[in-house]
Length: 206
Image 1 (cartoon, rainbow, N blue to C red):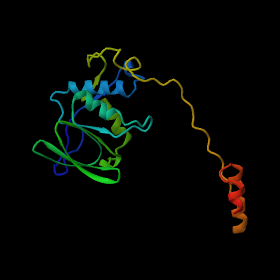
Image 2: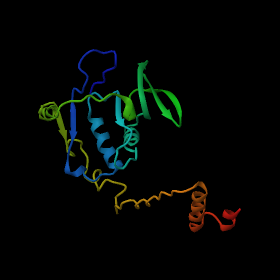
Image 3: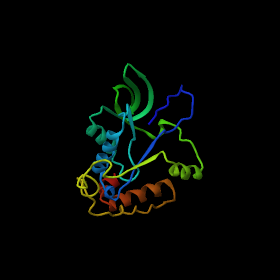
Image 4: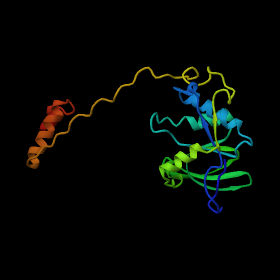
């Protein structure tokens, strides 16, 4: 993998892609998923100076995978990074927003970052280019045997948590539009609050 900084000329992009694919990986929770990814990263030669993960997925939305990979690999980590600045003396300088404040952090390499959506501008490319990319020989496919893992470590068998039941959220109550004079509107709201036991009648009559 190759990381291009803003001052470097050339074609930005990945020199190599690794596709982790195996039926055994299916159904894994964040722990099992992190274990597979950590095993793949450990197999890289040379070991990467920087691992970049998304902040969280749009389905389970846990934000666990990046930190769990860092813990398994023993890497320092910074989560929620929205700007990667520069490398100086073996340290990477990054910025992130945290509880309304802007943090500037220096982290020793190798390290892992989870980054926010606005970290970079995604380039548009035609659908045909995606098909071509996956047909090239520079895409490596690794399964459970390549990573030297046991099936008890991955997928459903390797998951610390399992989904027992899925159900939709309760439907939202329909709103109601009330029209009339200001006094009638106030009286109507008070009656509704009294009916819901949010407001006592005595309070409404004061």
